[in-house]
Length: 68
Image 1 (cartoon, rainbow, N blue to C red):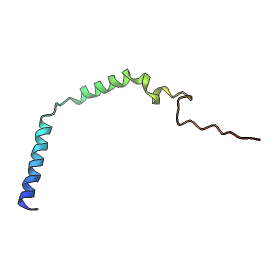
Image 2 (image 1 turned 30 degrees about the horizontal axis):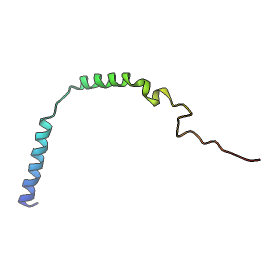
Image 3 (image 1 turned 180 degrees about the vertical axis):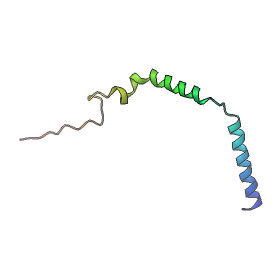
């Protein structure tokens, strides 16, 4: 690796570290509590929990028309 590309790579690393140092950190316990609250508040809109009506389900099996 040449000197100029090494310096350029190190500048990118320093820039990334500065950006990460400036991030707002949240405790894992607080993040978990917030996530739990969000899930409980939005559970009634979750189709995995409430199901999907057959009239609005785009993946329902198609009806087969047959003529005798």
